[in-house]
Length: 305
Ligand code: NCD
Image (cartoon, rainbow, N blue to C red; front, side, top):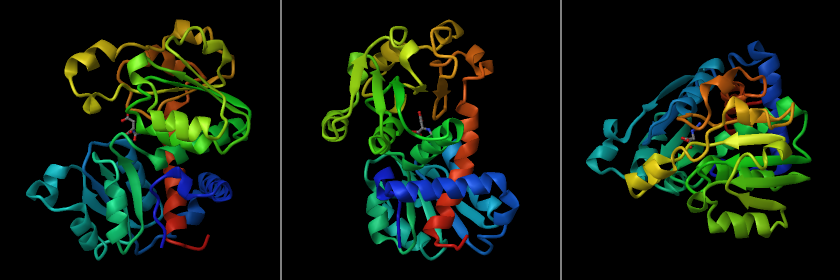
């Protein structure tokens, strides 16, 4: 039995297979509409979510399966003090696969060690968000043809943003990727990402605190929200929240085929006027999240395709 805790749990070859499957699902959805007949997905979300939880549910429903779960800690027995280990042992007898989001880093990993069914980390605190990364990789591959020789700007809250941590982890396995890390000084990527992931793998990167200077170099701009819920005090959040705002004027500085991604939700960091720019791909990205999650469910449940 296999779980998904980090994007590194799949080899590059396995990632390619997963994306090939997602591609086929996207092109021939009818072929897959009964593949999970009789199977159940549990979504155990101890933290707010729109896209991740609903795209997982849509994925399972598209495969002919069913879904059950909870969408906040308050509505589960966590509010009574139950541990994730006990919860997953029980859920193991109610469902065939579980997607879990938790504010504590490592909670889904603890759950997976006690689980009798595959557990997918749907975001653990400021740590990792592997299925967002699968979505991001699939979007890049679908729109660019391959993941290779790209200058990728990651902008915003690189300290607390788990989607950024997982994405960097995954991208260092692809050739010719250059990173431009765009954030205020206080929201730079954590030390372990800089040293253990980027430097250890000999990756080219630079850290800057303005967007305008680097816009023209980028093939992809990955915007992120300042993660209010992970700040220790509200004043710091207020000071930093509007540090970067992507506007149509800034888009004028970018390459004609640059692509803007964002895991969403957006707060202020992308002006709504940018949405009509053909380079704004964040809503397409959210749509692609369903295809890759369908592929992931089929793979972890070992359903022949
Ligand atoms: C992200 C998350 O939860 O980390 N959202 C998502 O899953 N698409 C990004 C965020 O909340 O800013």
